[in-house]
Length: 546
Ligand SMILES: [Zn+2]
Picture (cartoon, rainbow, N blue to C red):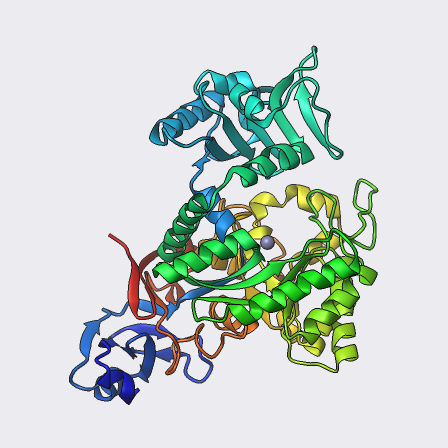
């Protein structure tokens, strides 16, 4: 501390505040002091002013609530930035409104090779089938691509079909469909793997590094304005990492990133072990306070909405889905990663997938005689009661996304899973009560990332889109102060960052957020309209509300 002050680092005493520290040693305080990029004092106004000395600038917080900067426990940074730059069609009620928005977006971005949009709703389209002609009426000279709200299909104009090389001769890919007219000509609507393999693969292919930097910039700006100062990225690949390295070296990576390298299921165990070796190399190479590779990520199963999550008993429609990674494929790879000191994150949504994930982690710690690796399971939407205590026993982090259980998007989920299973959906409280360490995040861009509405859902189990809807299994709701801790201190712990972030305590990096009104002193509804006033990373303001 003394050293930093001798170096001439800026000292500030933030006084007269309502400080929620997320630090169990001292949950509340009135003041804290920052020297350089570090928090050096926490306490009463007098204590902090005395400790900071006469050279410190005193900042009056006017009783404003301060929390640690939020740490989103499950995020996709580049994808979120890409989505943020698209025109958002979720509020368009009909084709005319979609056309107006797309036309305006195209005019605002005259040099973009593609006009990109997202989140149109089927109920806005007559017969729920969009056509290229509808888009040609407003943009004919450039390709247009608009993703559906569920990210399972894409809508393109005629120039788009041409750019993608889709003709009457193009065959439907397995698991997908190109909509056609009576003459076999594509009409502009690509479903499932047709969207993925034809449209999205093409976009990924034509995206260059400078565009990725734009995506990253957009994501960081959005995150800072919503109070997020760190994310755990769950889909790191070479291109995304390259962009983050550039941002860090140029000094604008104003969100700390801890990344999990995304494992591809293709190939044999040898191929998978080669991916682990690559992740282990990146783990050694990237270890800064702003950018760190911590482990790998597996997508063990699919999702309940599409009946692709791996469950023990059939869905309401009678189907059962195999896992993407079964025990035999997963066990040797998780054990190798564990032996290499990598953290494993396993996307597991159905009860059978969650059991497999716990089993492979248990196996790894047995064969390696390891412990304390902080492996984690992502989503855990429905699990067997018998597996609940295993999280605490094995030291496995339960990484959950309250935004995914928003009652406004639950109808199909509940119908597919059926009762009594749906009554045990997203059991965050049950896991907490069984001693599991729960971490909150949003999985953006599959859901909005603003932390305060996410906390509203966590603490009420009601909808942030439509709070009048009935709560979704309200007995699983979390007390708000605990939930904030899960979105800050626990999320930091889950990626081995508890020593420098997630709490307002001496020795922590100076990442914090000011908001109003005081959400901890009000009804939970306040979380839906509270405002982030100021976001600080490393002691430096990265966002201030007008
Ligand atoms: Zn994800």
